Length: 65
Image 1 (spheres, rainbow, N blue to C red):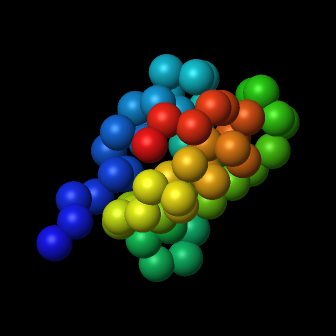
Image 2: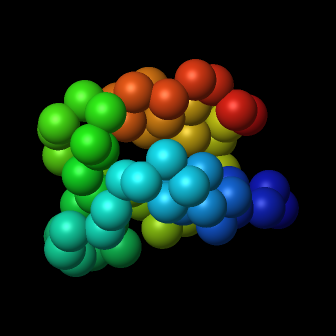
């Protein structure tokens, strides 16, 4: 079974000064990016590098997976 990429993703987001705003539906969280000035969703069980890179893109960060 693939390992979750979420812990590493959250570390990258925190280092870029993105912040957790609130819990979303199910196991999703709502985060805010000071770079793009937008909110985006982070799943707590991301297994796909494509999904992880899409979250980084929404946050205004380069690909890392």
